[in-house]
Image (cartoon, rainbow, N blue to C red):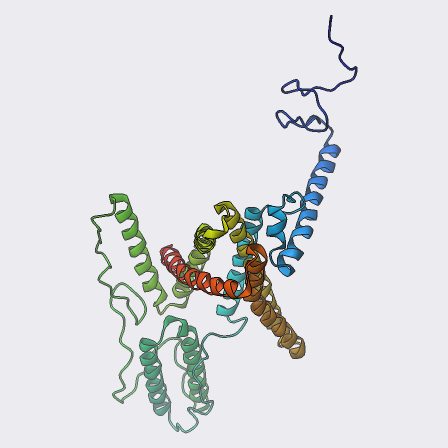
Length: 398
């Protein structure tokens, strides 16, 4: 006798399995066809965007304000309404370092707080000079002092020294015009009868007074226990780092700024990868310190992902608040102070959040939680220092 089949029963177009919903439970293919008008495709795209956006709104608030909530929800099997842990961590990591990169560039370029203040220049430095020769002699002496300062100060102070030199030359030209003399040519060393030592010109190979002389320059280092390709890559990193440091000490502001931007960009391009390396290391630390809790390594990995996702979100907020405070400072100082208080609260919330999260997830007493929190934090700090040091060296070799 033939088997009766319910009329109108839909079957999967891919594997012919009877369908019970909009997706095949055997192969996962959707019942909806991709061959549809364009306006239907736009509707589906908007629906997918709103669905993801809705998950973000369900994920970010508890991630910021409810320590351990997302991790416990994930362990309980309630995962659909939240963004996946790795995706959440990775996106926030990229956003945090992107914002920090912008903030660092803003500070270095002088739009925020100056790293090094320019040496003070007296506006009446040449007021006592009665002849053009005295003006040139005083200018040569002060320029020589700046040249000596340039040799003993780090490269980050060069823009401030350059600004002081330009100010001195402008004051000297102003005094020369007042005395009826011809101003100095831009960049010229004033000729005087006094035996004032002018700044020594750099040797061949650079335009600046500071040269990075290193035994590593032009030489190769080989470790017998490393394969040939690793030694070659290491030497490439070293030679590029030395070349970048040479350009960072160049007197030419354009070359120096290019090298500085290249170093900063290189370091920030490596930092997200370095932090991805820290995730399994942090999970391994949790596994070692909670070995008697009989939890799987994957559970500790979820804790590590959510912990780092919160840290990156907090760093993103703190960076944005710092940039907002710098923008508000010249317009509304009282509002800038309020933003600074919020930024301080974010920084204080970071360690407190991690402590409460560790207590809620692993459910131990406060004494044991505090002890393990300190031990895990101490080990993580030194691991982070090593990873960031390696990342800095790799970034400097770009």
